[in-house]
Length: 388
Image (cartoon, rainbow, N blue to C red; front, side, top):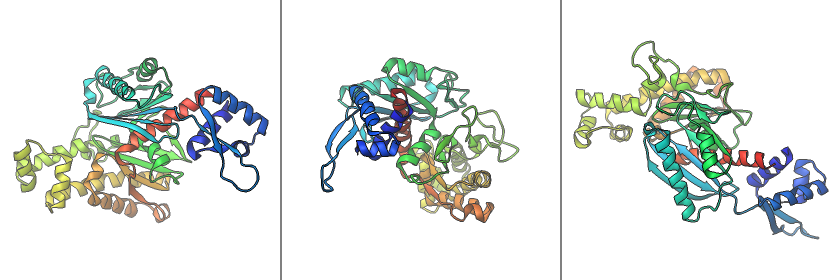
């Protein structure tokens, strides 16, 4: 029932509470609360947690989530797998990361997910999972739990990710776009805890935006809201992975930055980047950041141009949505203060003062944990809903 779901979420978000507190929060009589708690105790979802702190008189008995509850948050990136096991209150129990290539296909990548989870289980991180949340770097049908025509994920279109993981691990599974998952993580465990409306922008191999309105994730009618990487910012080259021309992602992303930095190194436009290309055989976003920190004019130009392009897109979103916060996350946040300053400058200059007067534009507090934290949160929401 809905109130059981709300009860479990209260214990997740606020910790141990007395029966009286739960009754007051849920607006239910004490006898009903006791009856429902007995059912949840029998299901190993809650337990008694001892007496409350003394306030004079008889002390209330607290109840808490069962300490054996476990959720798995899985964050699949274009080049990585990150997994975290959490308890019922979403506190981290164990974590594991490794490089991966999402283009190797769903069988190979999900086999590694299964193997990592088996490893964590063997190490004692969990006996059984109550739920799994997984974020993938492409459009997702949230209703069906499948990726849909993801540009950088060949072989993943309509692959039954949710069904197969649920079958393998015998628990509820939720699948969402990676940036949506990161937005949820930042909203519930990061810098955006008090934000009712927020744009979470991930800048990595691609560019995406998670949208929170009224404290809830907005996915759109088909689950593809926030796909800002494929907004056209110029009417000519380069061609994007989606097949269109002049997309934001084709002009500013990890892949685009590496392309532009490599061209600058080979043409001699940047001696600093050329040295790194000779030394390492390639140049990365990290190289651009380090060269910019050393004062390389070309690297600084590449970062500022990218910030201006992203800032222009965000300025349009600010005028349309009027968010209370913009959070920037993803691998390219390593480009540092130059990037953030450029984004802020464009957003504040090109949006109306009423929309930006109280609009912080900040970096993610959770950093690389945003994805796994959000995935665990979504897994807990689903598991608590199905338990009620």
